[in-house]
Image 1 (cartoon, rainbow, N blue to C red):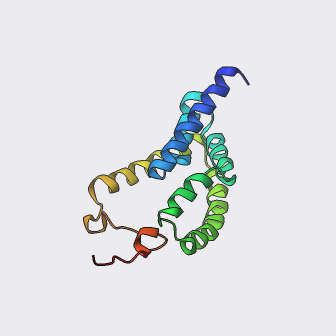
Image 2: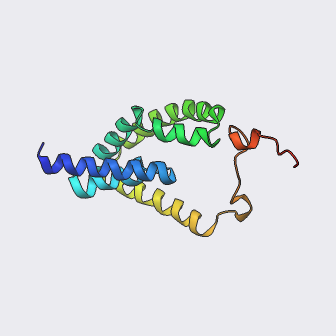
Length: 145
């Protein structure tokens, strides 16, 4: 592996980490396209690499920050993680039976649908909702002066 490749991998990882902590995206939305476009990975190789990164506790510091502010419900995390394990297995079985060309198209369609929903079909009544648990400032009573 060349120095340029290592630096590019570090840059992609850094950008994906920053965006993951900032807006909750990173693996699929940042790393997969970057690995395909800039490093010449096949779609399946890029997806497998992204999944391999997710298996390690790379997001632990970001999770700790969100937890401190009350933005993590661990019951939800555990339930979704169990389903994610099963879904990941089934999705990988399907993906490995499709060609790279078809996988790129599936990936692009998923990104397009998510972006269209976020741009045009978000429910405005749920915007601005604040957390109700694990927030230290909400556990302090206001005393009249």
